[in-house]
Amino acid sequence: MTLSSSRRFSGSSSSSRFLLSSVLALGLGLSASAMAQVTVPVPANVVNIAASGFLEVPQDWLSMSLNTTREGSDAVTVQNQLKQALDAALAVARANAKPQQLEVRTGQFSLYPRYSSNGKINGWQGSTELVLEGRDFALISATAGKIQTLTMSGTSFSLSRDARRKLESDVQALAIERFKARADEVSKGFGFAGYSLREINVSSADQEVRPFQPRAMAMEAKAAMSDAPVPVEAGKSTVNVTVSGSIQLK
Image (tube, rainbow, N blue to C red; front, side, top):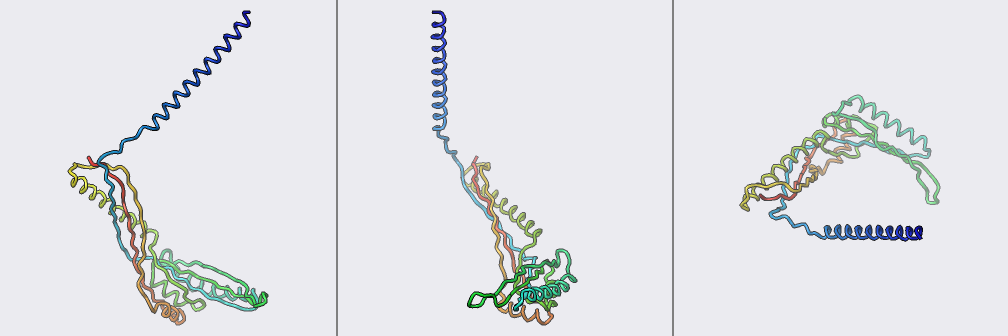
């Protein structure tokens, strides 16, 4: 009897603990659900505003591409012709190379077969490219004009890394000052003494303005063949930074 009673008491205790745990878990679940349903009041006197700043500066970095093509019945012959043309151009360019002023690098080098109407290879064609880039526009254009084995294929202007970093920093500071001034105007306009920042977003966009040169390509091709400097003219780059966000009027 004693053993039997002990077993009955032990089973009853286990059931009680299970029931208590279930009740506690249910209570905690209801409390969490109730807390989740609490609506956070929308703060009053919050205003969303935005301000922009932009600066326009001349582009200080020129990239000039020169290339040539060769074709023939033998792939090795075409490849050697391209290599000779590129080596001769590199010899001229490297003689004038200066860090940041005139930097020299090779571009694309391709060689691919040509096919006849019946699908068989009937020849090979390839191309090679040399890129001159830097801040010294006069030196770059003069060097390009001296290269006789390659011809002009294109030019592009941009901002150097240092110039872009400085410009973005200046424009961002300008946009922030305009945002602060607008926040002051808005708070005073509504009769408040000041404001505090709640949320801020900063975004930037770049735009390049290039000069219109209707005769540029013809002049460049002629200059490259006549040992004369290639005519170039840089445009301007504009960086626009917008600061937007919300303020709490006080």
